[in-house]
Length: 298
Image (cartoon, rainbow, N blue to C red; front, top):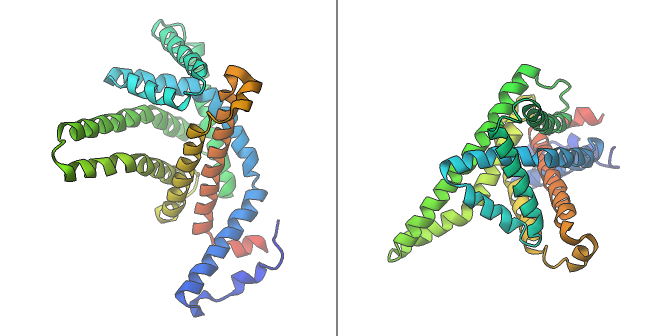
């Protein structure tokens, strides 16, 4: 889809423009690419597919995370954080953790070695494959990774993820302990407080940057991922804030769905989160392929 009257923008010689006008021109080009590509690539449809895949993979992924976290003694910390996010509907949290505990118990008992392992791998591969398909669509890549590369890359990501979560949780606990044990040093406490408050933003921005760099089956320049990754991280945390702090105000919504009100709200939050992720990926493409986009529009 082409927007009327904008084809000539790519014919402007930005070398002759002043720095502010050159910056504004490039911003307009980025916006055009993102808007046109969002509609053409059906990113809303991809976000819906990713929401479904994420719901299927939620319990297996949580089971892996808790298995590693409990081995390091951080299981209660992660459980507390998840319960905080579902504090409006604690019944849903109890149900999720009962599924996770049952999954782990059967795995330890050897019941899930066959069918359970196949289901685990299927849900994880389904999620990651849908992510790669969405990113390849954005980058106009026709070929996905072969099965060998998928097995190596995807399994590595999902088995490294719990260790990353555990390590960051351990660092957070260490900083909180250091802060409480040094009450008389105001400068140290203020520094630790700033680090604690900025850690979630830094981690989520790094996650988006790495996702935009590694997930497409093509070469993505790291400099093209930095600004989209930071913007996506900020947007994600803003969405997370509203999701966590305004659930309790949706009393009429709870009256319709009862104790299961958290499920449709969680699915809505999940789909909007994937929309933010995909828009950031589209911004990465716009940043790297801005000059070539004129030939694609013709």
